[in-house]
Length: 419
Image (cartoon, rainbow, N blue to C red; front, side, top):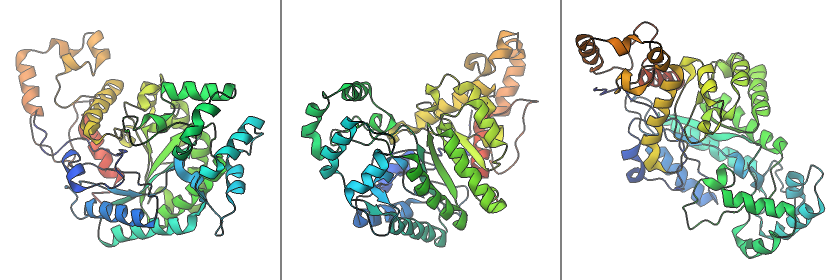
């Protein structure tokens, strides 16, 4: 089958490189979106990274030649570094308010005191938010496609053990049961933050038991979402172990801004947030601008994932890899397409129905696919072997939907490319 102009658009990826280059990304992201999470360590690194992302970002005028869409924002894994006060509080006050707000144990207090000298001084968030605004406005001024992201809430992420305090890890990890649990978790891979980039020998990654309180994460998220509404740009949203608080944040925006939010800003819940099918259905009814992009690596962990994919409106489905390894993006996105096709009983471009099992129910009940004559199969193959123009309506065979073409049309609608 030839699909010269129709193929999946990757709506989220997490490359490890903090300084992306055109030689490292362009070949792997032909007609796709890259949303790198740039967490600069200082103004110089931030300026360098943002300028490279802006340069890579596609022109909004070249609607059929999307290569990379730059995203700017601050990820919930790192918001413990930032304070909402213009004058930063002392380190002890700041981190105690984030990590010891819910009846901490004596051991936790002792550990924080031990690690405190190795934690970074809190940084005012307002100047960083102004930097995000400047980067986005520069992209818009230059006619570049741009999004806010990756931003969001994470109820599972734990503070990394400071690499400078690596010499303390063995000693402290044997103190009490909490440290034994910590050791077991790191051996098994930890949370998503630990799993990503384990092959990077340059980073020593272990986790503490400390989680950033959700109220602080929400305040950082709200400030960034307000910027998205003001500038009218889409959002790449992270939501882990926080479906309720995430929905509350989005519904609060709807209540405050109305159609100025729901009709101007589309939100992609990456990897579908691990939400339950019923919670997604309930929330999506009130948020017409909410999309979801399932991934094999993250969404696929849940036993209810197939039901979740079926519960998402067909025109709100996107697709992603959610991998730090850019080299795997193509394979993972295609795997997600195959998976979505299977879950929804959609046709899959480039595959023949009897071998893919996409319409499994019909196969098991004597599907017409299994009884097609050679001539009928030949006619269908010839019909499918055509160049697809994604800007034109495509035909469906009765209730059948072509997976890649559906996902591509969803992506174009999400990014408002045809408006």
